[in-house]
Length: 397
Image 1 (spheres, rainbow, N blue to C red):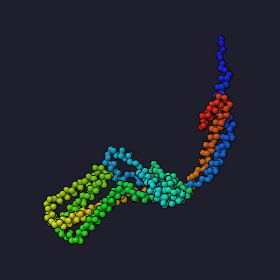
Image 2: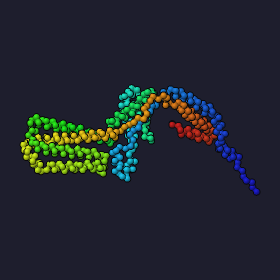
Image 3: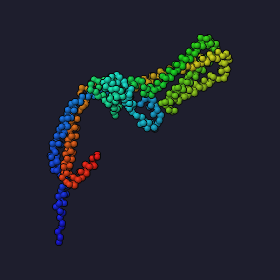
């Protein structure tokens, strides 16, 4: 019988050499203990010295609560959508995003730069540099609870609190200027129409006054004057009603009851105007104002009465829009005013030293194993050849 063959001793030894035991790892660490412990110690000393040179930073924070919920106009629109109301309401973003965007706007930043003379404080040549610096020390976030938090970092605790509170002040100013809600947008729309109507009325009155000084208006007979005034008043009411309907279409659908009522009133005014301007009436007026000056006077009188009617009606609409804006005003409530922080928030020196030491320890351990691997590769002829090949490929020349 033949005895089973046993593996050569050299093969057994090679397999043992290929295995890395825990003892081998500990030997390598013990061999390079000066590197492993010395490097973190030196880095820790440097980190301590560096952290002590960093200035203390104080963080002041203020919390505000913007208007919650949708305005009455938006609610009315959603109510008319029926089953699609859920989808429409889901598409509407949180109003907090609007106010966060306003707080981060360039207008607010420029006002703060001018108010606190930040160009001189940051020693910057261009406002854009100061805006970037201000954005870097400011953190504005909207929480899930609907509260907006404004945090400002500064070396001076008082200035940090003043800057945080100034953000809220600038937001108040911006909401007064911008038409944020639907009610304020309607107010702004009627305000512009009202200003235009006032200018048109002033021009028409100036033309009529000039004709009156020449004595022309007295030639218009009483009945013709009354008909012209009635016609002009109806035309003015129709114009204002059309303006009102145009404003309502911006936030209301065709099924809106207020819009439907306004459209019916417009049709009624047009029918009344057509009846007033009938053929018989037109002949009666023309017969009483046959002269060229009388016809001109009728035109001037009609123009004044027309613009006067528009002016009066738009003034009422403007006042109603201001009342609606006051009812639906965007009131930003301050929950917590920023106060001077009594403790620094940055730098966290202990964290800096700890992280630097751990990073140096990791690098030291890694470098110890790299050095050990290179030393063993130089002893092994095969590995030495491969190491030289690696150095040749890494060389730039």
